[in-house]
Length: 441
Image (cartoon, rainbow, N blue to C red; front, side):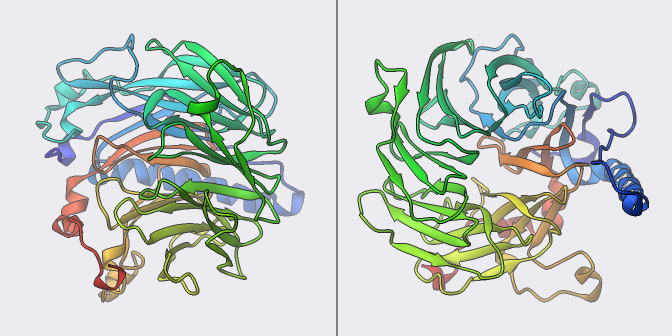
């Protein structure tokens, strides 16, 4: 990890004002004062966050988009040829973004380009403020693919990053094959869902296998590699109808090439082997909340996390889902995404409509705290990213830069940020080496 320090922080702002605009829906007369107070609080929190950036981040970039993005994903370096170029002090990276215009403008899938300072990459050397000033970390839109409606998720195929799948607000699902210059070579329509869809996940272990889920209560399995050649429309290989309500998310297991999990408004977690007739797990895990999202550990075959509508993050073990291992409390509104850190086994992150992203260190669960430490939250709360002024729609860790993430929110803002080394050292950075609880082995 780069030897960053607080003097190296770079905060890029597209907005000319000190604070981004905060929009709120129309209020009734009786609640207008409350809405004004909330808006004022959001602006004050943002200003406080700006003041603390140099202590919290080794790097932070903020870009205002024309429309909010519902999805964000890092693209591996070297996937595309960019007009923006690497320099002595910067490396170019791309991100997949979307637009949500509410019908007021054309929607697009976007490929954005940005420069990241080489100091934040593993082995990177510290940079002076003058050297950092040469890095243009504001996002530039390099390619736009026009869409019929808003795109809820866009994800590239891990084995071929120039192959990008999307799912939209009408359930429309498409796969784009792009060339090295980001131009579309082929567009394939995946025909099944007819209602709003959010679940979208490529199989990390089987090239071309894709899962989708939708408000139509189903999960669809697609074999893009085998069946899409020479055709522009594709039917699912199999449809799973184990849920009785909206399927909010679906994810492949990271170790097994055949199993996946899904969560729904019916409060069920369903764990399926694609070769089997019946699910291995079909259970209501909580009668108090539904789950909006899930992720499986990248290090343990049995650990998985769920993000609840009740604002909590739940840890479970696949071998016994009759009770949760732990509930992590720190958010105040529904969870929108959960992701496992690709570099650290014990770090899970969650985003929420409460405008925050929390990094959790599950090794610290149950640790004793001093009274003043309790004021900062539960012991497993490692760090809170609080710079967004709208609900966080999506976020993702970088697979190339440890402790670095990208996030997008309802306030049209995209953040790229790397947690400061100081914050990590204060929380015992050595503790982030891989450790596995013996009970979970």
